[in-house]
Length: 78
Image (cartoon, rainbow, N blue to C red; front, side, top):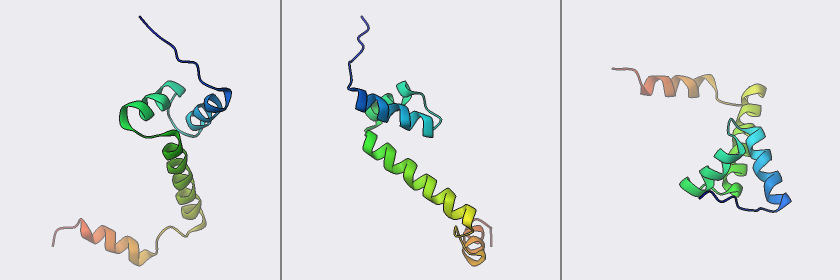
């Protein structure tokens, strides 16, 4: 037996907004919340932080060349 929960229009709008900002469907957004404990608040904050990081990178504020060298050198064999 399949059950479909009824959710408020506001909650549906949040789910759809998260789906639109990510590569997930609305059903996947809800599954992420239920299966992995990533609440809608958490998912919204995560997407905000990703967007802020992309914007910073686009402005050139992402990392200095020295930062990039330090990270690359962490993975090079001595």
